[in-house]
Image 1 (tube, helix red, strand yellow):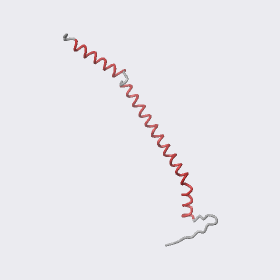
Image 2 (tube, one colour):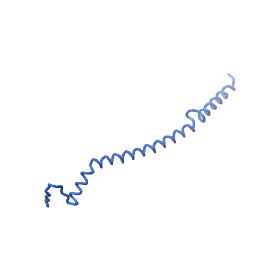
Image 3 (cartoon, helix red, strand yellow):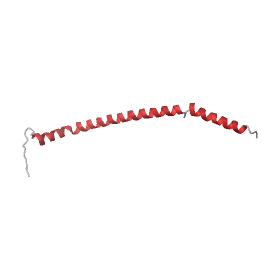
Image 4 (cartoon, one colour):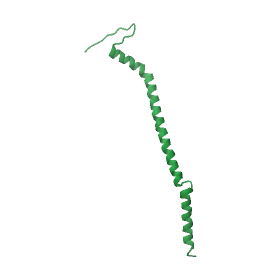
Length: 91
């Protein structure tokens, strides 16, 4: 076996690895681009999550809001509906 073959094969492998590292599918620039896209998507997901939480809170308030307002008005302001008798029991 020729002693120059081993270094030549190693050199070819090194060149192939460098080409893959700098210009291939898993290259440094491709990976950094994907990482940036992931960060952007995470930010969008966080914004969408906050918007969903706000909407869910609004829906809850709309469902329960009138009952809470009426309860507060009755307790704090002494509200009485028409044809209703208010009876207060003290302990």
